[in-house]
Amino acid sequence: AQSVTQPDIHITVSEGASLELRCNYSYGATPYLFWYVQSPGQGLQLLLKYFSGDTLVQGIKGFEAEFKRSQSSFNLRKPSVHWSDAAEYFCAVLLTGGGNKLTFGTGTQLKVEL
Amino acid sequence: DGGITQSPKYLFRKEGQNVTLSCEQNLNHDAMYWYRQDPGQGLRLIYYSQIVNDFQKGDIAEGYSVSREKKESFPLTVTSAQKNPTAFYLCASITKSGGGSGELFFGEGSRLTVL
Image (cartoon, rainbow over all chains, first blue to last red; front, side, top):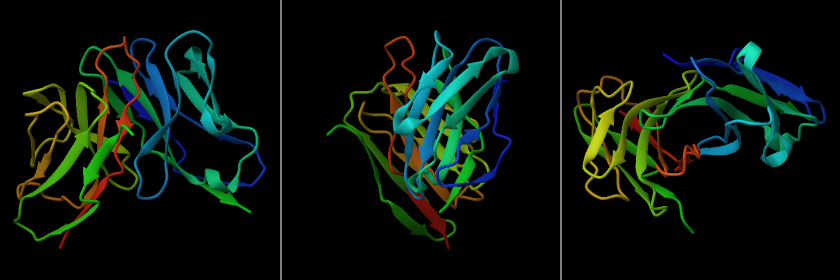
């Protein structure tokens, strides 16, 4: 069965510092990969997605992610974090052919210190 | 504007009562999903439906039921058989066609608290 691991439950960074959130997946083929962000009490918003092609994908709000097949990773990065980036971030893997089921990691809570 | 509407946003229920959460979408999406979110556990799939009048169990379907009588509606009933129903529930939808565009659109969620 496919799985998604986000090893960091909480991360705290200072405003203006760089950010990297880790995501590892377990899946037999190259998956479709996503990063979502969730503000408290809200639904999820898509930051970026990877299907194929260039392994460095750009998303909204200045985020990017790099797909590394050899490491089964899809880490999310941002060069300079803003206080408004404080939220929970979820990595997800799409299983196609079986109802387009999205499997989520357990999330990483980002805190930004001013 | 197109989107997904969940209601109610907050709901309290007594133990032993069934409760139904509404999810309506005007995106003309084919597939709809219900996820449950608990702190530290991410999102877990309860039920999903790819077409009208058809649905499948997800990973944690016990104690829940759904229906899909209309394309735009996918209500979730939390029954008294669900042992720990207090959670945040998220509805999502996706267009089935398009070769895996893959992006799920989410509603803003419903928070259910059992008293």
